[in-house]
Structure formats: C-alpha cells, structure tokens
Length: 171
Image 1 (spheres, rainbow, N blue to C red):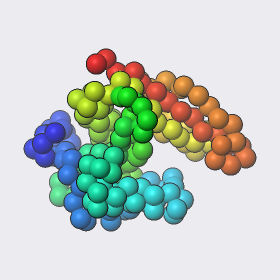
Image 2: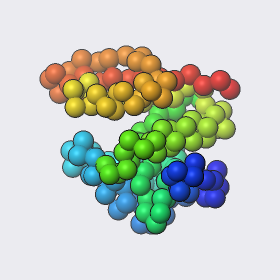
Image 3: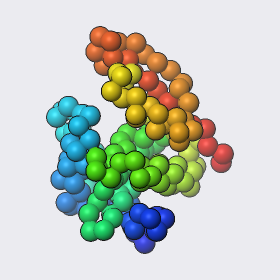
Image 4: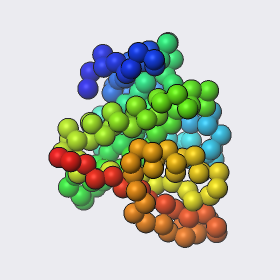
C-alpha cells in the first residue's frame, strides 16, 4: 500500500503504512482522545509503534495511518498471530474522538482487511471488553461484519468479560 492511496473524497485523507518517528506521540494523542483506555493501555499502544520503529517488519506489527487535512486522525495496528498460518489480530484501531462517526474507522478497517488478504490472511481476530461503555466498539465491529467467536467472563476484571470477534476472509 503506497502512501498515495486516497480514501473517499469526503475524508480528504491519505493512508500511509510507514511508521514515522513522531507517530508514537500521535498514537498517544489519538488513543487518549477516545477516553476509553487506562494510561497503561495507552502506553501499550505507543509501545507497538516504537517496536515497529526499532525492529521494522521483524516486529510483526503492521500499521495504517489516516493523514487528513494536515493531521493524523486515525490508525489501525495489526499483525499475524504467532504460531498460526494466516490468522491475524487487529491490535488497535482508533480514531480521534472529534473525527468519530464519519466513516474513517470503517475505512481503516477495510484497508487493513485488504492488506491482510494481500498477506495471505484467512481470518482476522479482535478483542474488546464486555463492559457497557464498550457497546459502541462492539457495534462497530459487528457493522464491519465481525461475529462473536468467544466470550471469556471476568477476563479483564470481575464483571468485565473479554469478547473475541472473528471475520473469515475469502482468499
């Protein structure tokens, strides 16, 4: 995927796959803006980009960034699950709070799915919390045609289940 791939004109965004030195700070700002994550979770999102910067492709992390009107408004991070053939995790997908609800997240997910198919991916997994405040996240995944594969009660904390979604790709 070239840094010249355009999203629909309504977004006026360029999608790039290169992680730049300033991207960890941008990821921190995007993830913090959502008001969904604990500070330690934000740090993990940043660490994945730092690992990609330091190890390159060997990190196992792929990124797509939506650069819109002079700012990076969203990103997705994914990678092949170790010890599998063609199973991928979407580790993070986030859009700045003020840019949510405009289709940017869906476009990033579509582009990640396309990239995963190009990498011979067969299945995509993602996980999220079962807490009520994560209902918009679960609804987003379901609108992107992901289905619930498993629910692990009390996984993150008492009363906070882990919900695993899957999407099978035609390869």
